[in-house]
Length: 147
Image 1 (spheres, rainbow, N blue to C red):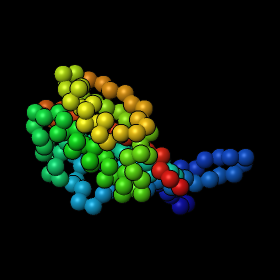
Image 2 (cartoon, rainbow, N blue to C red; image 1 turned 45 degrees about the vertical axis):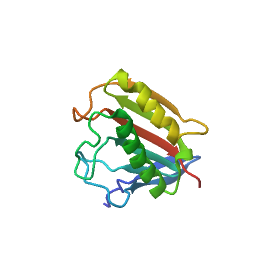
Image 3 (tube, helix red, strand yellow; image 1 turned 90 degrees about the horizontal axis):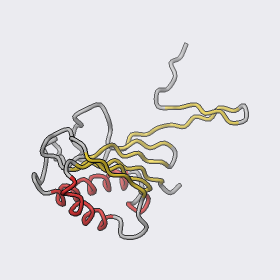
Image 4 (spheres, rainbow, N blue to C red; image 1 turned 60 degrees about the horizontal axis):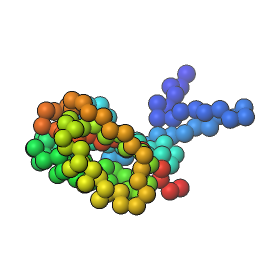
């Protein structure tokens, strides 16, 4: 018996089965993640960007102590995933933001506004501990790409 494709999810519509493939999105030059995930996963025209931390290719925290610079680095990494999938930051519809310290909120928002100057995506922001103590921000995104 053949094994089902783990990258395909069957959906039923009116007694029909439709396969919706999932594609990994990995920008050129990406480092190896700390855990088993990819930078982005696309299903149809929806792109899910994994939680992105201010890491270099070797998973070292960059811009230690500077929440604004870390936010810029994170959003540039997210932009590279979205552009690799054929979209732009205008296609981002939702962001999940995790910050270590509320005192960094203004610096994070100042940089965030530069990346979303027009219509803003929906978002939430949660204060929490992050994977490495020097990381001040993590952002995960959902983008709806053009067909």
